[in-house]
Each structure stands twice: as structure tokens, then as C-alpha cells.
Length: 302
Image: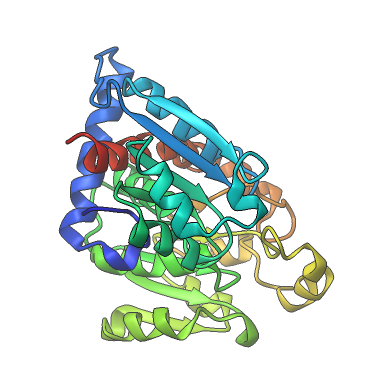
């Protein structure tokens, strides 16, 4: 593991290794045990998309690991004024020990890894969100004990979250059902990957069908960053793709609910269901910190 670019790149064993280390780092933080694995190291954090959880968790995590986080907005870098990604990658590789980037195009992340000589971490692209899904998997295992026999159901847009959840959950042994409108399905690359898991993967346009006997229900906003102009069109397309009491009745009685946040209550999830599962959702948000610390240690400690 040289970079974290997308879930497709990780083996099942690498995912479990990251989760095990994340559990350890969380325990050490809660018990006041120092873990300065990255003392003297510097992480450059490039933000071309706004963030709450990504910025605060990476910045705090790097500090807790003994390193220094450096916030870099697109306004601060020549990359925001047309410098080629390959030049930026080669320059920053001579200053930093790692780069986390939160941007639009997956190609930009892949190019940084191709031309740079330091670890690259994908903090989010339009194609995938591996850091969030590692935190989701960490949370599922915390609450359920293991992944064995579990079914994850995703309701909503076949977006970056759906893409990474499909891959991550299948790789750790879970069954996956995804419900999205016909015009908003995940890309062919993800569907082709999932088909390799046979009947452990199901895609439908029926939320009720997807939620049957689910152990974990997950959703995301109907219009992500950069899609604000499509908000009204998407509101109509996703009507009925909501986690609510009726949908929860299809799942197992002890099913958990996750949301990567921010949540639009009464759109993709009702206020009632959100608050009933707030403990799980905000533990998931906290676990961004621990999972990302594990990724940074795996990539940057040596």
C-alpha cells in the first residue's frame, strides 16, 4: 500500500489491517496513551472542495500523531491558476511527507500519485470517498462485532459514497443491496466489480426491496457538492428514496443507520430516524479521525 486513491486498489487484508490499527489508535487516544508515529512529518492538505469533517479530522489526527498538517486551498496554490498537476506533485514531494487532496476529478488524485514520490491520500473525489467508507466499516464492526453475515443497504444516488461502499463492503465479506433511480446508477466500473460477487450484490430501483433483511442502512444527500444546479431535478427523481419508518420496517429490528453527513433531514432521511440512530451516525463521524490516522501511519510512518 503506497497510496490511498480508491477502495478498488485495496485488498481485503489491507482494509482489515487499517481497521485494526484504527481500533488501536482510538483506544490509545481514549486512554491518554501517546502515539507520535509521525513525529517530524508534514502532511500537505489540498482542498478544492469545502469540508468540515475532512479538514478537522485530518488536521487533528496529524497533530495527535506528532506531525504537522499544512492546509492548502486552491487559492493558495499555483494549481488553482493552471500549474499542471504533475509539476505540483513533483515540487510538493520535495517539501512534504504526504499529501491529502479533496477535489473533483479522480484523475487529479491519480496524477498526483503518478508524478509524485510521496504517499497520496484521496480525501474525496466525485468518483469515490475511501476515507469515509473506512470509517463506516470501522463503525459497523464496532456496533455489530464482525462483518460475517451482514447485509448493507444503500439508498439514493449512485455517487462517490455508493461506489466506495459497494467495493468496501463486498471486500470485507458483507452482502450489498443498492437502490437508486435508473438514471443515477453507479458507473460501469463499479457494477462490473460488484457482479464478480454473484448473489452477494443486488441493484434495484426499489428501496423496499433493497432494505429487506438489511443490517445496515446508509444514505447520502440527493445533490452533492457541485450539483446544486440540479437540486430541483434531483428532488423529483429521488422522491421516495428516503430512509424512514416504513423502510426501517423492512430491515432487521436491530438494524443500524449511517450517514456521511451533512444530512438534509426530511429529504434522504427523516428527522425521526436520524435522531433514533444519532449515536451510530456521530460515532461514524468520529471514526473519520481514527481511520484516517491509521491510513496516515500505514503510509507515512516508515
